[in-house]
Amino acid sequence: MSNSPTKDKRIVRTEKALRDALIQLMETKDFRAITIKEIIGLADYNRGTFYAHYPHKDALLEAMVKDLIEGFIQAYREPYLDKSELNIDELSVSGIKIFGYIEQNAKVFRLLLNSEYIPHFQDRLADAMRNVIEKDFVPPSGAGVNHELYVYHQTYAIFGLIQFWVKSDFAYTAQYMTNQLLILINLQRLSIKVTPNK
Image (cartoon, rainbow, N blue to C red):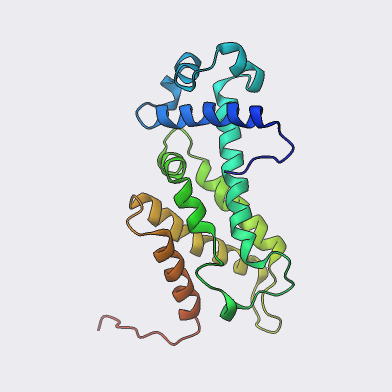
């Protein structure tokens, strides 16, 4: 997950320890049942240190979610940073970073996408993707594509892959998922065989 470059290293280290402790506890307990005492005990900090960074445990969770989504968006934009045009033919497995980012933060994505207590995480992640696509991408001129529909299609096609991958408990590697995404993108250019029921 991303960290602000202006933060003191000690602050970054402390916040990471608290977040890691929360993640570890959420793997075995419902978030509502987790106490600050348990968090600081696992992180090896005192209560005063916790409150110096977060007013309550919900603020800790919110900071973790916000940081996770910001990191994801940064990874999503990686292939076209500093470019005015994205050529699909030039996309490569090494250039697409989103699945690698999710794999690096697998525990958190698994917890948040499957959590009953945090039902809005999926919406927040999808909204963040949709906002970026709406801002950064323009469908080909003359194609007759409704921009709003284009944005939703691009968003939920990728989001669906992410949901499947996480819910399958990461049955495939990040590299495999990236390669499949590239295949699916290029597949849209081909005619597809259909076998309707007769």
